[in-house]
Length: 253
Image 1 (cartoon, one colour):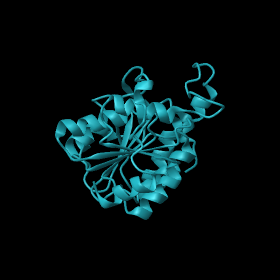
Image 2 (cartoon, rainbow, N blue to C red; image 1 turned 90 degrees about the vertical axis):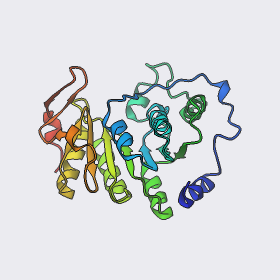
Image 3 (cartoon, one colour; image 1 turned 30 degrees about the vertical axis):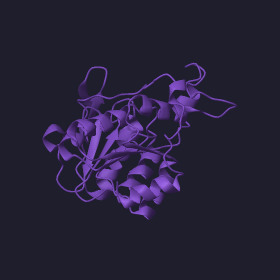
Image 4 (cartoon, helix red, strand yellow; image 1 turned 90 degrees about the horizontal axis):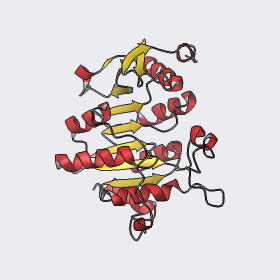
């Protein structure tokens, strides 16, 4: 572990897994962990020493990345940045989904479920939670000199929020590193619009694979798998590329 990461853990109050009663919680890793995803392919090819995941929910994708690093015998860590308060879709659907934010006295308890899931999976040695907004976390990582080789953006799928995350985390990305963004599908026009605008602003090629876009600082390690994504996006229902929705095209330039 680097000095910067050790300093981060110290600032955050030490190892959050120490003494946590994870056996009081059943494992509940709602989410995704598709081995075909571009994120997992990037990890397999790059063997990164640090992956930063922005938006972790219950930890399924972070656990999958940590297990992949284990399988590669790579000395990597996964930094998980999240408020664990839920997005708009979680808040609006909380009642319909049986209190999926696990509110106690009005306050969500998803962070505890995240910790329990990581410990049930035995990945607490690789995963470092950062309970914070993506904006403040980016400032903190910048201050400490933390430079991930892979950054996975999967927090808010809103156009403005993702635009801010891209602008903050691109400078943090190590040279030769890769940003992977989730949600480049017909269901999330805000993601499409934000990625398209960032590509134009930075003069970068916009490429995607199976609903995840990729921006690389240097050579793209998965270039042959990706396809130009200015005009099409992924439809996860039919698993084919479809034209970009009109609302994404009409978003601010």
